[in-house]
Length: 575
Image 1 (cartoon, helix red, strand yellow):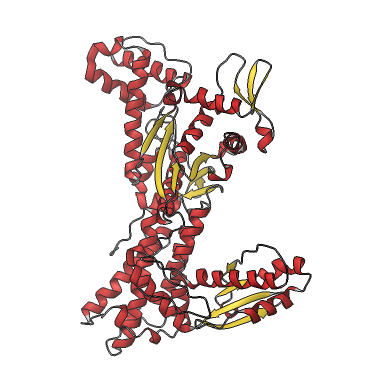
Image 2 (spheres, rainbow, N blue to C red; image 1 turned 60 degrees about the vertical axis):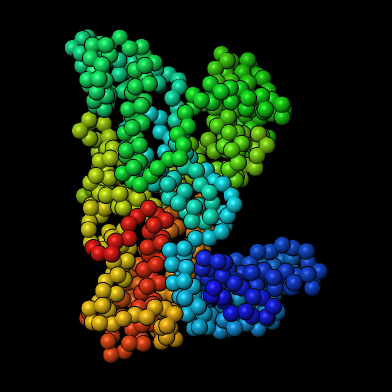
């Protein structure tokens, strides 16, 4: 197992099967040094040293502002504190220099040899590079899409689906045991309207007169479902009860939803019916628990939850004066069940119209006796489709909306997944349909995929000229002397950090931003200096340099493939 060089009394190691960067090791060292520095001065303050990557390479590889964090409590200028912390650092073998710059930043520059260690670590980890132990031994649940089974999924659901599944993938890469769950409302008046709609469509299909319900579902999909039912049961279909029509419609719509998810590479571990909460008495049990904990009160004939005691702007009704339950009541029971199942982290991927719902949901979780910080909501903002500079009308053959299936059929799953992750979920997204159709490197997902295919092509070029790469272990990496090569290695080594950051948020879009940065840095390096860029990396008259550069290309290929895999996007070898 490869180990990082020891320095002072601090001896960092690579966890088995997982490569990390020097950032983690340097952070641990700084945390230890600052802790001793404060203790020697009689200051009892917990401070976490944050390391950033300076935009200007002249400032080194890492920088911390910890001295400025301590200036108030120590009553000293941050520049002086930074100098004292620098003097406290033990001798080490991978830091080339440590500099203090005003007003109190401490900058660290790695030695060239450190980049070689990182490159070897990436190659040694292979497909495991990027996987971390952040959530090792912990269970996480991601509940997403959760659209009611009243019609096909449209593009608004597509962003929710992609963000939810990618969040699950990121958490898995960070070591969590993840359950993907789809929760749907199969009870209430809208389900009855669905049954009445199918009943009307069945009668029409049989040539009979039918009154279409006022709040019925007018989509063409209901006509198709009716025709299928008539084909199966003939005239007998007309005599079914409304609940039977509802059950049949829900089953058919769920098949469509599952097929749409499958086209995006999304599979749920569990489909949770709201009706099961009522049938099993779980809603009443959750309310009784809240009552026992003293968080319910009656007023104006209704039952209220004291959510203001947990930071909500006002208390919320859970049972109306007519004794019917509000939609918050089953949600409370559902989240009680989530925590009962032992999930350390519960991620709810919600639509933008639920932004104000989050505080009351967190308050309910706290009232149940659970840590509300374990509930991590992701709010999905609106998507606007744009084509030819104009906003697209949401219409299909059925005259209603663009379905998720139509989007995937025309653009492909890779494009759909990547585009929906290019911005933070809580930001509105303009989906450029023209750009999504573009198959050149102007298309962001193709730019990344081309970079991976280009790496593979370089190795084919080596085979064509008869060069046999001996592997990274036997390559003279010290020949990688260019600044661009060193910078690329440092960037590649950040994948585990990005995975941890994306999982901690959760912020899955961070992985897309990172991939685009890697692809850009690699393409810039690849095209430097030669009319045929492949000649830069494969030079038959310089076999040692070729081997070193092939090692760098191989590490780049590993990082691109691993990060794309986490996103659920293909890493093609040819394009």
